[in-house]
Image 1: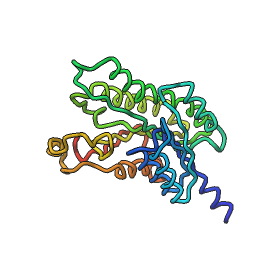
Image 2: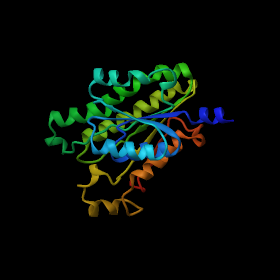
Image 3: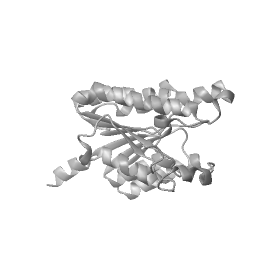
Image 4: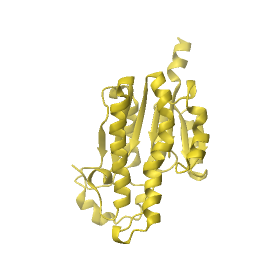
Length: 249
């Protein structure tokens, strides 16, 4: 009985971009669900320390990886120990993302490439190396965090919308490729969520566009990730689940 319980407890979630905002909430929720957590960040600091403490408070193990998903060599080196065997994660969450908002007419090449490199190219760098091991094991969950902006588009976010739409397309295509091997691939598309990235937004102008008349919380996004990582979503595959209060219907 005891050995069976120990085996059941050995669940690992790998959260790319797992120490700030939505990513931190995902790490915390999956730890509460019984997953040990590997979380990545570009630079360790107060955010990663707080995430570590939260995960450990749930009685789970926490591993921090410093890496920039835009750097393929650095990313490959960081994730190499987790690509096979018992170290291969049961759940892989891609949550790395940045915004560099500007009207397209005034957008710089740097603003365009920074966002596409992190949000879209980073997905390839950080997720593709795990797929072969998941195929060999014939199970796993890949959960991609996109955005309402990737579904409907948003003025001032041509770069961000393009990158988040790319994630949806990539996840849907990947779902068709690897679903037969027992690997579930889904997308969560948050709307306006209270994080450091949205603190500067004009909330009074935004709320009239949200039928629920409030901005969302990172915990509400993490709850959907929890569902997709758990036992009740075994026939949910290739889907985009919006968490946006009705902003995009």
